[in-house]
Length: 222
Ligand SMILES: [Zn+2]
Image (cartoon, rainbow, N blue to C red; front, side, top):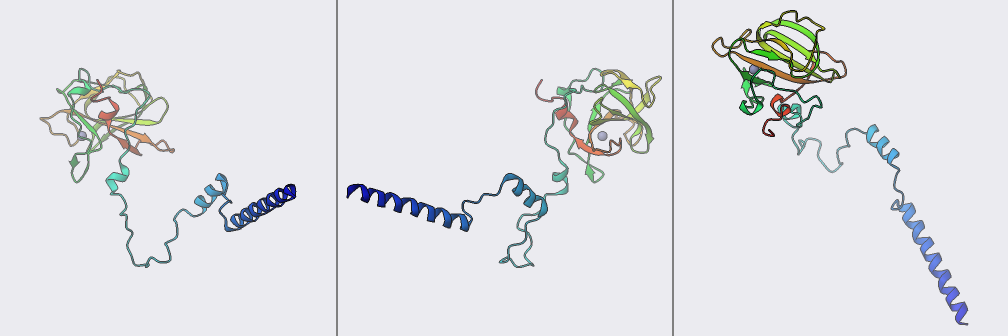
């Protein structure tokens, strides 16, 4: 008699668990979509639908980030370890003016003051992709690093180094020009205006995401 009681109990237990599992299955609690399915859902519905309870006229609770914040890049370290592109100047001497407002927009560059004629050197190794004389930048050089991931821009040059041409391969530290005040720089304040851009897939010298040069130069860590 004792054995049949245990058997009946065991049967009841198993049957109960099976029923519970069935209920949970149909209620969806045990059905976790696979990672792939979850990704497909996300990809197919980029913007979650507005909850039905929320009035259509209600503005979004979270304001979109300001334009400047959206463009700002996280500190990034460049494997080439760029050097300060003006001879005799250390990163510790420089002031970060990347976020300064200039003519109503963010500077997006590092100004490196130096006496007129001081050699300007390549921050990294790579080819000159463009030599341009522009109204704002004056005499300028655009250089890609060897991996063509970043573009380095040197502006307000007094003049180019002799024999510099588009396509020239510059070793890191090679002289490419001299500090001046061409373009919109003040004549009594010669400096190098230096920009670093992370290039997009199209690899255009005029198109990229500005990075703060001084952070790339290891300011504060030396
Ligand atoms: Zn500048």
